[in-house]
Image (cartoon, rainbow, N blue to C red):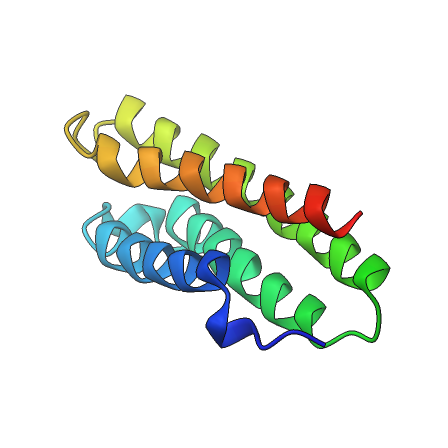
Length: 115
């Protein structure tokens, strides 16, 4: 069992989830049940799967949850890029996309380490 709160990947995922909540609060009201809901669920899925997987009894189980977190991280990246295309987010907000890419790499590297 891993203490998820001590994992850098979980800490970054928490920071990203918080930033995504703040960013998406500025999206148009008509997106409340669309893109806002989806991007928030995806961001929460990343951090939640890391936490849940860390509490499983084996590294194999942890890897399974990390793979789900990785998939959600790619969803978040896509949704952020869509938000830029739709004008809901500035192209200058690339730091959040860059941090999402960093998070994807960290999850991938942890998977490889545990396999």
